[in-house]
Image 1 (cartoon, helix red, strand yellow):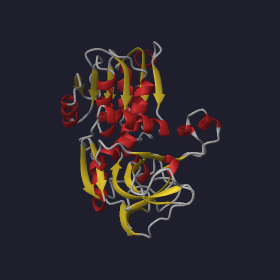
Image 2 (cartoon, helix red, strand yellow; image 1 turned 60 degrees about the horizontal axis):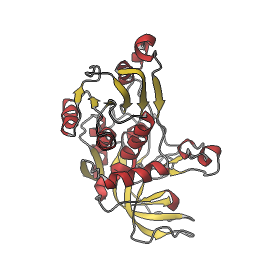
Image 3 (cartoon, rainbow, N blue to C red; image 1 turned 30 degrees about the horizontal axis):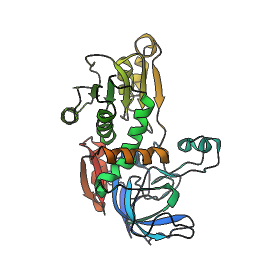
Length: 341
């Protein structure tokens, strides 16, 4: 099969082609696994974190990609959940132990043996991949393959972020950063909280224009202040500065939800500007988002199909994965980027 592989940790500022094309044997599904013929795979900022070493794979080489849509090509021994030909999706959660206290409490995203697709196990930047059938999801017919791919991570983790924000209808929601996850959160929030105002903070004028087209009540730069303080802010940026600015835009008792697997070090000095009375006092809260559970993915796919939420996507052939990643790093973003096999 054809695949794009990561062999080494590099800076995308120095190496614009961190993935190499490879011809590999097709994987074989083990017990309880299915083999997917991949049709589409979303491109996520987490891949940048893997490539640049902020969340490095435990082994190299590895095939990245964790927003995978494909069709079942073969069932491994003991697998019978999906018939051959069924269309399924695979998200960031590749597996969890199922027996630890976190898993038993419904928090498999916090399992100490959590394995991530495309980091701890080979992912979807390839023509085929194997995955435990218990961690694959039926994809509703309303979505094309390319539309379904970003729902599996950008959409599902955005949905989890929105739930953790604790927003009530009519309250003000802020979104800091407006890439693949941000635009899906906005679409979801407008459906779940029709009386709420949504404010979008983004550095790019293009992102702010896009947010207004999707129904944002107000847009501004990262350090601008909205017309009224926000009850909750969801931060999807890889930087520290927006965290400080978001706290300044929260009203008393408000909650900041940080939807990022890592923060980059380029602006860590912004944390020195954190001022307790201005940013944290009056019972403001900070909550992080860690991964997703299978329930998050399944619930969001059902919700998105019912609305429906159709992501805006830009497609690239598998061989152009490096170009898609470089454009993502350069913040050339409108909606989501998807590789097609």
